[in-house]
Length: 95
Image 1 (cartoon, rainbow, N blue to C red):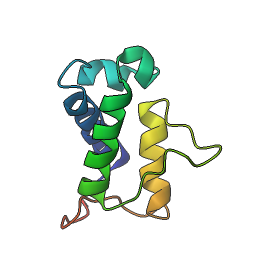
Image 2 (image 1 turned 180 degrees about the vertical axis):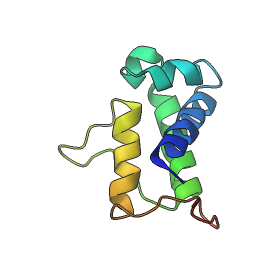
Image 3 (image 1 turned 60 degrees about the vertical axis):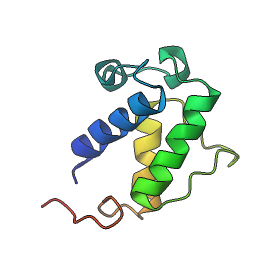
């Protein structure tokens, strides 16, 4: 999965976590997730979805690790995989 594909998928997860209140196109354009409409319940749904889909733990209490933008979340996923390919649980890296 390329970073572009990962970014698009994570944007879809954010949109789903908000019940569609935040559009994928708006997320891909950038900006603060909160400013775009992600509330605390949506954030918890998003964290759950990311953890289930990618098999990584998202710790919202880690000092210095902000998750204010889509790119922050994508960077967290890439870092969690040691910079290697990020694939869904049970998935195969795109190549």
